[in-house]
Image (cartoon, rainbow, N blue to C red; front, side, top):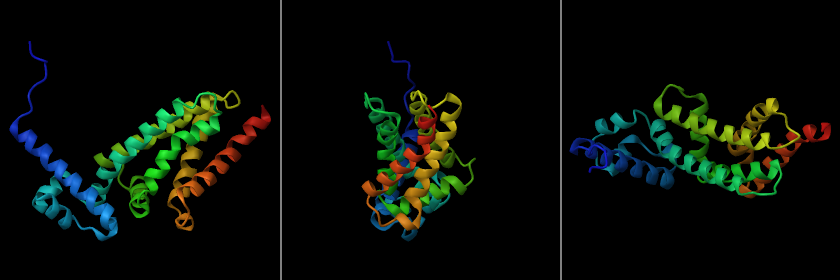
Length: 207
């Protein structure tokens, strides 16, 4: 008996192959030169597609960047969630840090690209498909933080989601502010840890 899956047609395979070439070309060029110095024409040329074809997959350079960064962001969130779930015996603060560490490293892997990516997610059109997918990933990160905080006996369920939003705002500012660009990942994470500790402290003191 068959597997029940319809075979992918030649046309669909060709579309997937072009998308992969575009993604690979954009990923390489953004790493090599930074998003500001890359043009869509350069991406099309390296991917060996016409510029019009490229625009069928991403109509702007910003969308190309979001396509590429979404994959990295998704992998970082997955890695962080796995790390947090294996942090047995740790308090909420350390579990949250385990979750966000790979996310911070992902955003700061190439500072310019990471800053532009987050800026585009926050200020771009949320209805655009790639931005919508990126915002869903950000929501998954926030939900993961909420889930970790609800395990803390000192944090009420009603406060966990609000605190998670505060923590994601801390991450955003700490990873994108020009003032902090010279810092190492470890220094940024240490600063984020201090801010999260201060954010959670009133709940522990009240308890």
